[in-house]
Length: 73
Picture 1 (cartoon, one colour):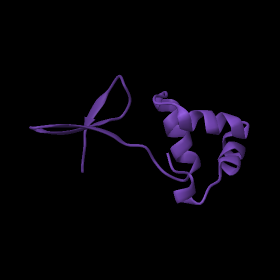
Picture 2 (spheres, one colour):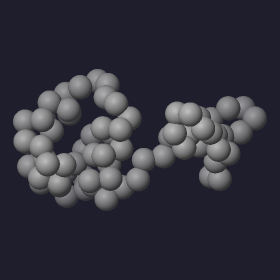
Picture 3 (tube, helix red, strand yellow):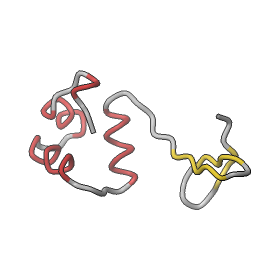
Picture 4 (cartoon, helix red, strand yellow):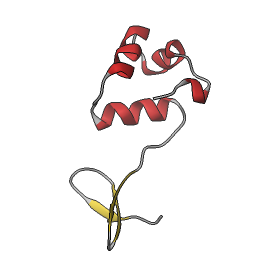
């Protein structure tokens, strides 16, 4: 994930997330993470996470992992 592209250093992101900078560096090296962690990081950078499953018959936006809603994309 490129925090630099959003103008944030690891230190700045760590401050927003109330963690130490090494935790951000460790996260960058991970191949997988919880959706909640990814969402928190994206929101800390001023973004919004959308998860969309695309099928031949249409797209479905995942609102959470217990309910689905049709995507308007």
